[in-house]
Image 1: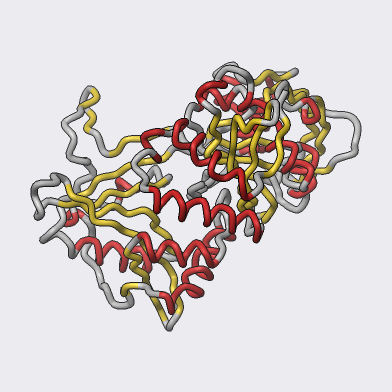
Image 2: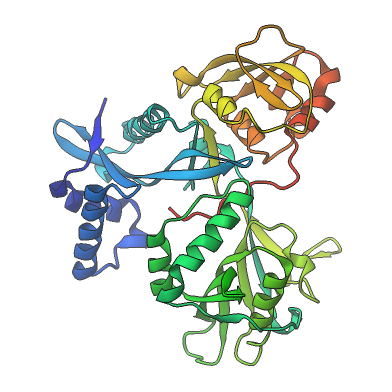
Length: 413
């Protein structure tokens, strides 16, 4: 059993070593100067408590594992609530298979549950590993690769590069978008200070107000050919169709020096934009041609099911009237294991009542994906991931949890 606690200043050098060894492809090429800067930045984050903290696991007074903790404000069905995030979970290579990662994750879950966060999220290095810890799949990430000339021509008026003087306007734009879209996480000013250092940011302004932006990088296709390059779009944020049209017009006009525009997005419908939706790869599935590739990424976890429904007391789950007993199995987090009766009155969840129309047996990972609206109830039932006491209620349970737009969580951590 490990002792898990926050790192002190003197622990960060060991943290860097453990991270370097755990993620060699990411960190081993770092220079000593860059490592020193990284350590200094982490120590400052820890000291100022800006929403990022670092914790480690000790055994016999030796640091054997580390992780980075993120405190978020997240939009869950229109309600802004606390959520926890974890990244850079690393274990000393000499101490693998000793349940150190388990000790770290148990601390992480308890830390955020105790702080009043109903939800936790992460980007998994292995989805199956974290599913065993109660994490359910989130929405898939899509990679589209479009020819600039296939993007719609439009008016670029209002499109311009963003600079330091635009940081506050970018922040306001992003957080308006986050508050309007389920799954999004609110940003802080520091994010945009760093974004402008790492990317070229192109924004769209109307009447002096930023209504959307893209963060882009030019990437060589062939390192020996200086004329062959793509544009990679990291963020695509827009509040209305006019903004999207302007940003796409900017990308379309790069056709003379860019082979393709590469979008990384959770939008499943982006192939409706270009004239030719194909991504240039020769892959054919029967008579279908490849438009994009998808990957499983973001995963969600309910830390406190009672608190989650309390936070969502004013949210209507599709105006459905239904009394449900959820038997949620959570073997990794026993405090969250067990049954809860929820009366949905005009769709709004009410706790503390007795009696129910239907009983639902479900593991916490599937429950997490369900309440986030990633997957519909009927599909979970069809796939054998959920059982109901009376099959006639499957349809109404499906309507209860269906969302018009699946969660969008575009947060790097």
